[in-house]
Image (cartoon, rainbow over all chains, first blue to last red; front, side, top):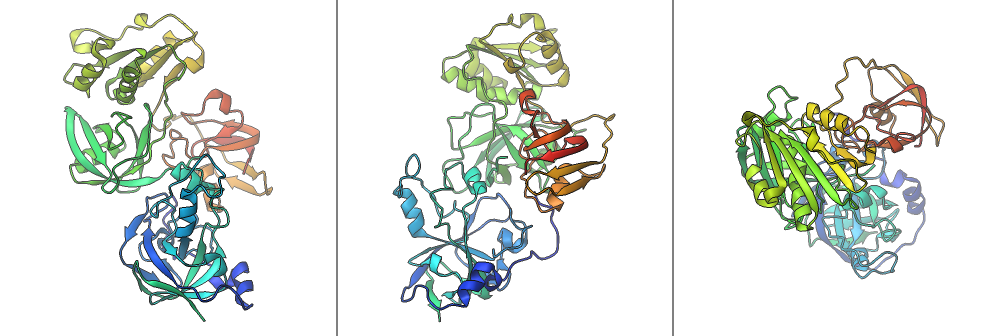
Length: 191
Length: 313
């Protein structure tokens, strides 16, 4: 376990991240979509199983109340990064279940409670949201960088998810405007 | 280095299986199935203050709905068992890791000889189930003061029938190493219990190849004569030099320098923090790395180096 320091976890502001800052300066990205928040999950500390929430309190510049990156007790908390909130597409999980593309022994069931991202969304083009602002209910997020699958997740789950999650492992975000989010909240681009 | 999921499990049942051993059944409050495990595996139990203790799973590996552990009250121990006895009761939520197996059954063995002393019986309870289910040739020697003091005795009698050989000292029967089989390629011996028992078995089998004798220790390194010296660790990938002072572990120094190293027991028994090294003379102080791995692997939680070591990081 990581030592429990009482100081606040250090984060990198989403639009200061090398990828977020570059994208934020140029126009483009996907428009005219509307998605939905399906699930919210947090874990109290590194390696702990994720727990589903029916309502979550997002704090600007900090994270989701009760999550390990909010508390500074996450596996990667000692390394400052954009980790206030992480998202993944339900479509990516569906693809793993279809074994698409067929890169491993067979289909992989990665449940919303298992992938260790905070929010599972559908109809949201996450890879196009680096450097963009978007809204989930009353909360406004900033896309900082694409998430990258880690071997740690593979070890924790005992499933070969590293390769199949490549390039669709989700989005790491900062919170610009905090508030309450709930499953079912619409997700849309903020111009 | 293997990361393990930590789950909040609910104590379904907790009762004394012998006067000082608490038998605990754990279920997941939300999921019908727990992570898969094999006979000989253990879990980490997290105490309320964040410390971690290892307990062998003693239930049936085929029953995915629950984990079973048995915890002996050790009044002069480090406090983990006292905490467990006082706090684990039906309905309690316990923080438990996914299982890991450092004491697996040898797959190709023709015959398995299991020797347990007291609470050392726990890994053998699952092994006996697997061996019986697989129709394997085995025998379980069970040493205890008396039948009343032998944890899990009734269920072991049901599983093992005449393969269970009790050695109860109150009846004047103390384990006799002369009953051990003669050295034979297909026979594997497993021993868990007080160090006196483990040592006597190891002494009796000193001619045997190391790979055919298996034991597991859930205790910290107690070596009062060991005097830690400072040393330097070099990170192979970057050339970074880290000074490890005498009063700090290599694991702590790595962490303070921003390295992410999983760990659990920090006593050299669980193997979570295992890492590779190249040059240097390592002073191995763990209980788990087999001799063959000590050439280039070490546990930075307890092991140190003479003067310097280069880490494969």
